[in-house]
Image (tube, rainbow, N blue to C red):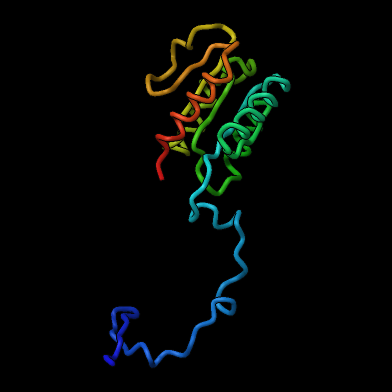
Amino acid sequence: MHDQFIVVNGETVEARSFPPVYIHETFPAFNFNTHREALIRQPLIILVDDEPGIRRFICAALKHATGAEVIEAADPGSALEVTRRLEIPIDLLISDVNLSADQTGVDLAREICRSNCSAKVLLISGTGVPPHDMPANWSFLAKPFAISALIECVTRLCAQRST
């Protein structure tokens, strides 16, 4: 049998000179939420809409149809707080365009994308037309929309996420 060697800090040493390592003595218990990024994961979506019924419906539909992890927010401030507290990047922001007098969905998306560069954006609105200041790489759905159109758009955007 040949001797086996490993490299530790740039030095080659015989592998047999190391005592056995027991993972349970070296590392804390595995926590799925803490190590989520290391695993193959479902998309993480932030959904922002000031209408609770619409928000709950979209959230339930996305969870059921895509298996995505969806975090709801009722206003821009809540959405920003959630994204600041997350330790992993979001894959998709879905936001109503008309959220409050202080901050629109476009403003919110711009702010979130500054810290989550790879996040995709889907804006939704009852006005029927995309905002004039919406970047070309964002997506738009006019309310009311078919749930199949929403699922198709979300699936396409999440497939483009960086892994």
